Length: 384
Image (cartoon, rainbow, N blue to C red; front, top):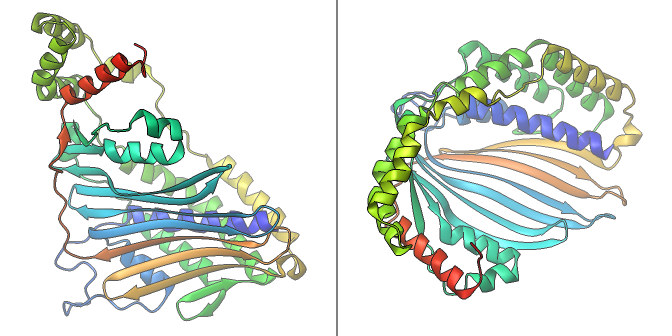
């Protein structure tokens, strides 16, 4: 029964993520407003999800909490969080607990920043995570001053607009979510599935959705997320222009000349990099109608075997909340059986607010990184 509850939780999270990620964005002036300049009032979980679909600027956080106390004792908390300011954004993460026997405990406020068409990677933060996982890595990087590294993004990143699924598809997802929530026990902004009849009804809603709507929505969402095709030849030239002076300086530190760099770059320019994309099989295979129908059939088969006795001590809960312009949806599975007791929960929260995302000041140049690698080689820590 535990596996069935966990599977239902994953389906609920998938639906919630699909709706929130693909919602059509409104203009800043009327987003999340009720016409009087105040945050729109929500009265149900569906209302909360609908408002989250309008999120465009502010802060966000998504995370999970696993607390198993049965035969497999485990406690893990993890989260991804950040800010969105137009096409500028930041991302941080935390993880605490034990995963496959490895103890982890780290937090990085900003691991990645995208600002003005350039992605900045927090190399120091990446190393801090590695240090938390491995003592040898910690010793290897002791005293190394790693900061941020700048990576220009393709022009297509700033020229393209984010695709959205159609109004019909959005309505289909919203209707599905509302139908799903309606099968549980309603208590304000909280919906609980703790009886066999409730879980069976929810599984039937999922099966129907898989049979009738899932394929078209998945295909549309995939198409919307891949609108821009990157010109690799133009992107390679952009990277060369951005890093050229650094490349020459780094090459000189390795006993190479500017002519050597130019020769290598000319060889790269002579290549048609776009041909590698054409030759590569990059198509993502989405489940077709037959596969979705088979999954629906398996859900119906599992549904018939569920009894109230199976669900004793277990439940699935979906809960929404609003505090001002902050909206949150969470889903959790609770099991009190001795062998598999515990709770697994996930959440997603957005807060419409004024935020600003800008480029970091402390950036390592390509020359800095080459110097660090040379020092590693000289110390014998790395072999070239």
